[in-house]
Length: 326
Image (cartoon, rainbow, N blue to C red):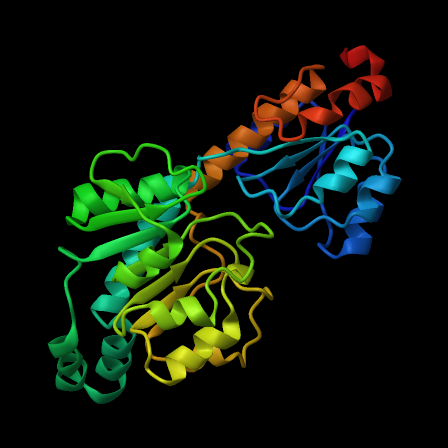
């Protein structure tokens, strides 16, 4: 029976789909050595944690690495391709969950929720209420979206049609914009936006994209929301801006080092919301991601190619490894 290794427990509906298709095994730990060892006799690996490149050298039976989600930065693509392993993902299925998180974070920052909640509990009703004098509405502000894939488009739709925000975006393609969305360069976007949302993938071009110079271009009251990947932001530059009250605040769901150390400076700011990489995680999105990754797993086990194959250049190598799949 094929072995299906998953780095994390799957949604019950996804687990039920795989019953009988193979032996479903949850990794006992997520460190590189454990994953490489437990993948050695696996046919499929479902990915919610970073995989070491060495995993692909020893997993001679491995047919596919199926990403439980959209981002591929957890899969070393060159190593997978060199080993003849198919890589697939489940794009767009958590876009709504992430977009709702963005609006939650923007509202919490603008309504000064952390300060209100803290002082209401510690000092009483009036102390909490005092913060509301400086609270602000969303309507009429400009939201700038960096990266306009499925998540960016979902953010833009809710922002424009749900909260009456002015929506600007920047993207590599600068394709024709949907209704009520305008496109700007990255520098114009950070200058003109009241709320900047990072939705872009982590690539060599986006690493350090929000650097000291671009943070310096932001409005003094601007908010920065990161649901992309931690290294898109220069942490030192952002911390300096927060210390100098150079920007209005930030909501950070992803970090260069995860988990974020408990003594990290980000925890010390009243105007920073820190969350544990949870923007895309809801009961509904976990079901959709689980079902999507199970669907792709079943396709591979049935000798078919994944619908969302991300390294098509590996197909000929793969077919030489598994002639029955031709």
